[in-house]
Length: 422
Ligand SMILES: [Zn+2]
Image (cartoon, rainbow, N blue to C red; front, side, top):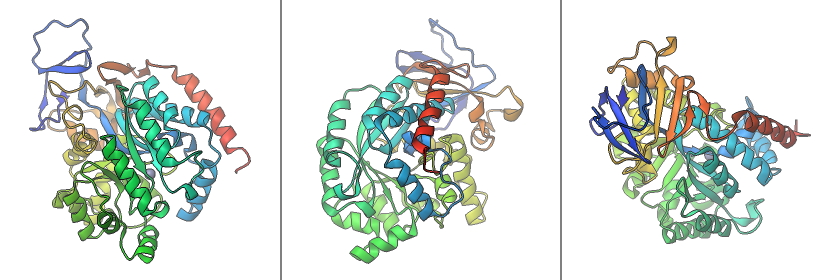
């Protein structure tokens, strides 16, 4: 059963023909292939796209839970400041494995030491849209100028098939006008886009307003920073005026419902309002210290439930809309609408096969497949993950590297990282 996510949102029974890294036919395929993968009793769907993460923070899973935001930030900053390129590398590998095994085939990342993260992405074999964080020098522990580090990272990774280097900006609380505009200039020069945090918490908005007289999105707009094709993460504390500024500028918003709820930063991102105003909305898990998983199936479910509960309306944020936000809308957000997000001839073969022959996914039919994907939490039933036409996970086993040794090494590095902090 193929959940195509094509423009008609068709669910069809049939075959998917993959040639090289592309899908060449969908439906009734007559060609005799070199290899047949039997997916009877399964859902075949496009790989999910996680539009906001800090994958290397997987080593920091469950390090600061059930504490107030200021305490959470103190704890995570203290750990962040001690990180080495080696533990960033192993944390990224761990995160990429978790994503591949739970049906995510591409992700958007903000962090430093992105060269190490790029290596993990290439080894595991999923797609990484990676941005080396740009912020004011006085606020960073990075060696060298952040903007120069970002530029060098882009230059070194321009031609990788799986890594797309982007420009990441931390947020208004650590970036001057000059830093924002330097990031903008770099993105246009390198023909890429910017990904940044915006209006995640109320203190962020109020402090910025006190400092500049403007709310963060109004400020970025008046600066001339807002750019078509950018992705802003969170967008919780926005006015309708700011929603319209984002819509008019062509900025997508990566909604992170689990992280927002877990950190209890209050409020509910005005997602139905954004959609109504024409903002392209996608979904992100954020980092593992505030989620504490990179599971996009659960992110879709939480996104739907958060807004239904908040609006007293079971009709808002339908299963179909949530699946769109994790596939086709996400592909549009990262400028990959022609190559990713759906199962259609000509697109890249980024495909996930979900086993439905088990109690938790039965019954699955064409008319409830999308609802099961969003509400029945099938991440544990992901059987195969294919990226760029190659298996990354096959029969529930990672085939690109030895999962056990990565997990063991990650445990050791996490112990070292946390030593003396607790
Ligand atoms: Zn974040």
